[in-house]
Image 1 (cartoon, rainbow, N blue to C red):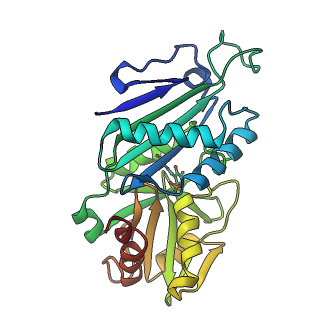
Image 2: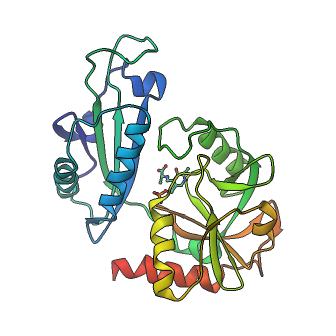
Length: 281
Ligand code: PDD
């Protein structure tokens, strides 16, 4: 019971888990990852997360040494071993440990790491009040659709936002096209329709984002992906962030400008209730 890790075939307490200092994930960010949460101890949208992990691994020419079936078994075992009511599952795959040199190492075995910790949701008061975000130029690499651990621009953007009293940063292109936040996707609500920036290599194809977009017809809401400019967000009735940990989280101001009436809007609240809160009831 407690924080659990899985490393290359073995489960242990997270505090005991070790990887080599020559692991390429550590030295080169030569690595991809997934973050998954459970609802009622069931890994949510696991098939979709494993599909994205395969896409990310393929994009960096990294073979995954385990089948989806085996990974699923390990995930279930980790959830069970942790004993938590709800679990945050972190999964990372690296090109393995090898003497430091840029080319792919011959014969290195990929490192497979998973961690199982208590899931932490956004506090209810933060969700009720909504958050402020700031926009900033996107200085990330050109393959943000690959879920790689090369997250330094995201880390710096998040910290800059916190230092300025905001909750998060939105990455915006030179033409004022909006991409995403530091660890979540973004949506706008206008005249009852729900839109998110259309997929590109500057946006992670969010599993939560897909889940929301695919749920819209059932909820009788129009929307989907399209080009979104910063001005569209500023003129929207509602803006919200979406991600595995974030679920849906209303944005009430951007760069100090109020969105809508400055409160978390009815569509954001409805999506949270119907698509996330309902999973725990
Ligand atoms: N982040 N965009 C970015 C840059 C992200 O890092 C994430 C997820 C998302 C949302 O994707 P999903 O709905 O599949 O969680 C969008 C995870 C939570 C993380 O970095 O821990």
